[in-house]
Image 1: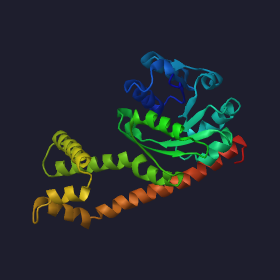
Image 2: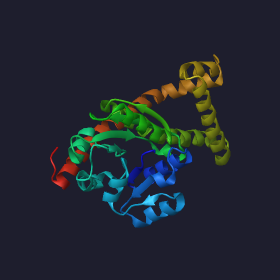
Image 3: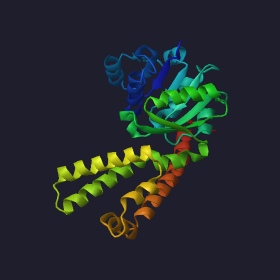
Image 4: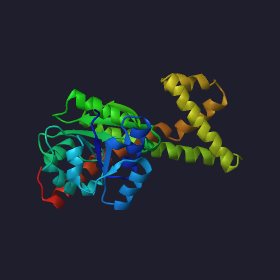
Length: 281
């Protein structure tokens, strides 16, 4: 029988996972349990998806072998303290908490607990996330395979060493916002050149959808760019303006800054959680 999953935290990511797991038939509703400090949110998910609302984390741990930490990072110390006494060798803990390192999680949950870090993005809401997984020291190949199945329910999954997780955060974690900003700018440009806003947005979004479809067929962006760029043509003129405006360097800098900030936030969060819990890792 497929192992039951216990979700701790029923916010946007928790809800996206529930929806993806059920719609992909990776889990049946009765195989998913959820715990959240917001009683109404738990009840809503129980009514909408048929999952089991658990008011007691001990029950969640007893009945679920796989536990997904999807609570707010500021709450993780308290949650870890509640879970620590109940976890045993059969449990796999998967954290989707940005910034919480494997070392911190291992120390808070128990040094022998099997822990995986996951970094999905907001596109999990439509089962189109780019999710990276980093495995802790005690994680088995079977554990990693199960984590891949879970997050494949909400998009594409890759595995990386934990040292890459800040870069993942800067690229695909924050990436949707860069794309949305590009869409805003491209739409605004269309309006500036005479289109109404609704038409400019429609053309922008469909252009993006088409470009992504072409990338999925042929992943070489450079070849695709060259194919649409005729010498002396309109696209060449537009691309020249982008380069003169620092487009490429701005993208590089955006990912660099987000990556550096992810590292800073990780260190700050670990210190903050340690101080609030009185725990030393």
